[in-house]
Length: 234
Length: 289
Image (cartoon, rainbow over all chains, first blue to last red; front, top):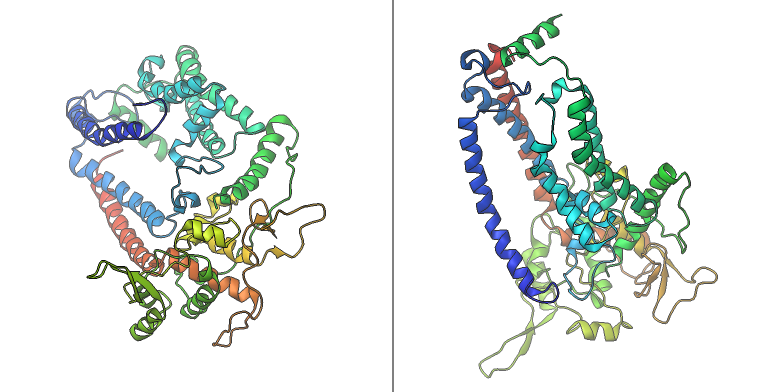
């Protein structure tokens, strides 16, 4: 940290890290493009391409036009935030002149940090809290080894499909608790949800793959699409 | 001055504690002590909503209140005299702004002899602060520091709690004027006497809206204190609304342009999205998917 406590040297070091990250992300974007060309796109059926002619379509215009539609729709949502509710996700305290000698009565991080902030505060130990907070992200890194299911797509995993949405609700709940003062029932709720967050990755995913009976997986992407069509026509 | 959050947090705590307490512990957790803060009521503002824009007359009245009452103690360092003549604002003419600025003295220099000197303000100058520094402001106000008013309307808010804070962001239900409502309510929430059994320290006043109810600012304005020349009744309620609108303008002088541009952007994007969607449908029409 450059000293005995968080101070200017600490901030300087974090700033240098902070400017480095975009370049690291740029490198990951490069990897992504490489993977797209070598391994190919994923698909909702989670089945590898068997026959390029039958199972795939050209990226342009198919994926290009579909993505462009999605991006344009998202820009509308984005414009709504920018032009009509610019302070919706911020806190009024951010408009008060910063004063290093005066901490606000309640520290509330940016909204996207709230679930992890809730985990940090749920652990009754300083170091433990930090470990679990970062551990919550590390879970995503070790996810490929935690998922024991033979089936890749959740479309053919009925129980996992439900538990996925339970997990999403758990993260939103943690986010809400992260914005509340850590008192009374909020602490208990945050501990229960934190336990569930880690249980989802470390207990549910490995066991579910062993015990869940998946639906029949189609032989190829083409079969999956044709089956869906037969279903929608019937 | 940072106590804004405690109001919000108390409100949010009640909602959160009630929800979670009832759900998880089977007993509501309403055991918090102390006095309740009243919630500001939601007023109707011309600058609210999808097509909101400032009411020029209201801004001019609000400016009069600001100038004659607030500015005696509060600074507004980010406000320049020229801003008062810009479109979307109080709409003073160039000559009016110039005449107004000349009534104020600002410090300039150093001159050729190396001395600082005072001169009449120009439209390009910022609003002169009533005190030389924070310590002088505290000394003159019983230890309390009157906050700078430049962005005060955005630096104040109150928490509405779940689910209202989600609904407040939706088209049609949009509610983004928490700060103006808070300030307007605070100005009208002074009580001459604190509730029975409460002892106020010297230099403290009782206010129903202020978080913690103790405020260092004496009741700043009462009925009839500022003359309105446009026929609007000179009541505390009108003063509070007008000055809150003015403070909102000062905090966000480009709000009119922001909303106008936003409307054009949304219309453009809606058409583009529609065209892209039609194209996408056509591209995929011959492919089963």
